[in-house]
Length: 255
Image (tube, rainbow, N blue to C red; front, side, top):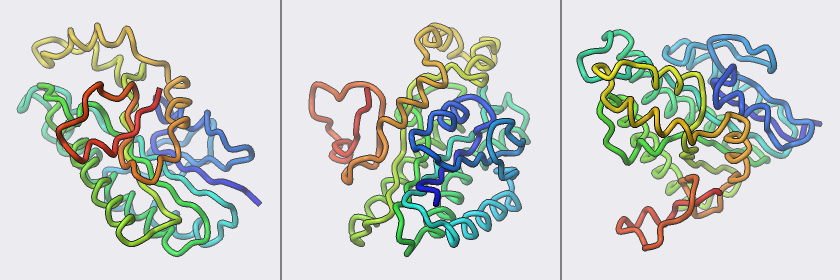
């Protein structure tokens, strides 16, 4: 019997790889979900910017949940598309469209697919959507990304509230702001010309403090599962003063 099964989208590299290879459950089955097969993990090959890809993952979740006999199933949705970095109107429109679908729609569609497949099952089922501090920052050149992240967090907050009000005990959901990660995507963005992305010089300075993918993956796992009251986890220390927004009180902080 496998005690745990963990899915990580985008585990072929970057943060997703760091999350996947630092899973803390002994004997856990780890499954990558991405367009490219992983050299390290079992993979569900799916284009997460397409309906066909979503349906592939949905059917996979249903089949695996139905025969799973372990104690814990977790899906960490980490995959994202950063090909739309740049001031509005300067990106290829097809790249921009793909980024909006992948970053905005896919987390909610795949999150629903996972939680629905786990409904009524006798094991713990947890959904983690990787968010970003960009959800609460205005960053020129990242309109599609920042808009997607705040949308993801609000979706998580809503589902979390539904679960609390329904007395849900087996399923949980949270968003996680992991901080700066030294990933290939982050390095690519830090090399963009300033006329395409005005924020690039600031990002280059920030990049000096970014964590490597394994340290970041370990830190994410330290915060899981969240407490029952937390729908959002964030790296760092809690603010010295109580937040004005009452919903912010449900944030959990991970060192």
